[in-house]
Image (cartoon, rainbow, N blue to C red; front, side, top):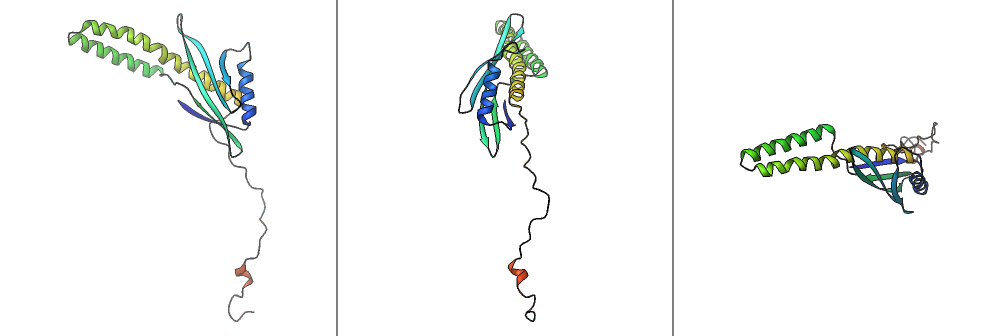
Length: 174
């Protein structure tokens, strides 16, 4: 998943904020990662998925300055939402039944551990991507929409006489 954030911080301030967040202790989600002065950074978080199994998800990002606003482009695996996971498991069940009917019960039995192995990254990345994106947005005080351009100061601009207004309106006016 690719997400673009916009922040008022400069690239140096953004990298400093991310670096400060990486070294913060006593927070709910312990982040690992690195930062570079050119605006590139990476974050990772590990959370338990089921029982003793945990999943580490990574986020990579780049801060660039464009037109007075800092643009932060981040990429992270999105995982699969609960409804999508149910769909995957239903499809795996259908494939297992079809393989059993076709005379391959051993191959059908191999699909059960495949479903368990798929569950960990699907659920882990789904939950971790939300955590990572929220941390980046909170740390940079960023928004998903670009800021509106500054409005011009109210008032009438100074009127300059044009060449047409200086010219006579008809050939008889002088």
